[in-house]
Length: 362
Ligand code: AOF
Ligand code: ZN
Image (cartoon, rainbow, N blue to C red; front, side):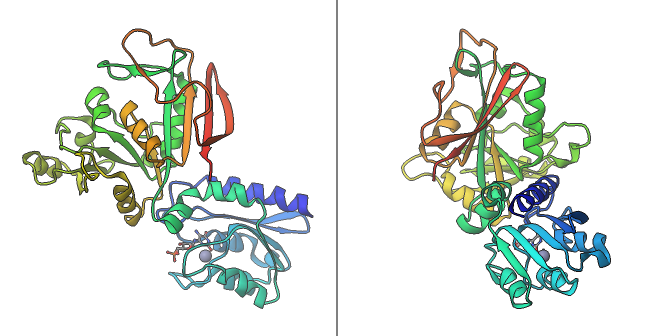
């Protein structure tokens, strides 16, 4: 039974992954209904956040839901939104057992979903593949419990320990397979953040350009304390296609109206005390309040160092390529080994490149 529970929950987590980045402020949840060892219904939170996963799985199962076990990656909701609570729907359908991976910290739920199910005589088991679920729901859980987004910082490091070459725009450090994975990561994030230095040097688009996923580009955010972004940069010129936010200390400067007129949103930020740099903790709070749960940062050396110093990165993705950058290289903010304060959770290979993921130690 326990092995089966883990196997079906793993399948529900894989389902949930498909809509991550697509469900707005709602987390992407997976549900699988199993009766007599056979899957009779599957659901993922719909794009935009509604209907919820359970509703979709129950609709697919119809009468076969009676007596079934429901595997849900997040505790079923107990609040009345645009539809009745999922806990009620599971009870009405006659589900016999509900296996939950992670509890829902939304103050409207917070244990009440599980309690409703138990009160109706349903067997509830919580915490199956909880660690995996916390990873899958990291953005949502971070915004709910810490009031800030889950921050993933990604960079590519050359064989000689560089992240680029000074004054030369983008230097190819990794190959096409690792680059596709980076674009997938963008598609799964609510927003992507870079510094004005990167915009000035690379003029990047920061969109997801994978076939079939081009409409899943994240909101693009530039840290630009003095508001130096050029109106003819790719970001500003495409602000009407994919949203652009410019975080700045100079929201009333001359440049501001041109940037706004192009469709960018200006975020008026606070300065870090005693500096002319944007205070990142306050900015991140603001982003969470705007409903952004997962933030990907593709930093230059300075922003990377700042995030590490202020312990604002929750996850590091380091892609180590075989390229040699050589003279004029910009040194990576990490040494060759494991970054301090982080633990390696996975390592994949994409052709010659090594893709390493590290999580912050609690
Ligand atoms: C579920 N199943 O698939 C998801 C849930 O705006 P609403 O009414 O859709 O509610 C949003 C809340 O619903 C969200 O904060 C979280 O508590 C829950 N998400 N719950 O039963 C789902 N996505
Ligand atoms: Zn629900």
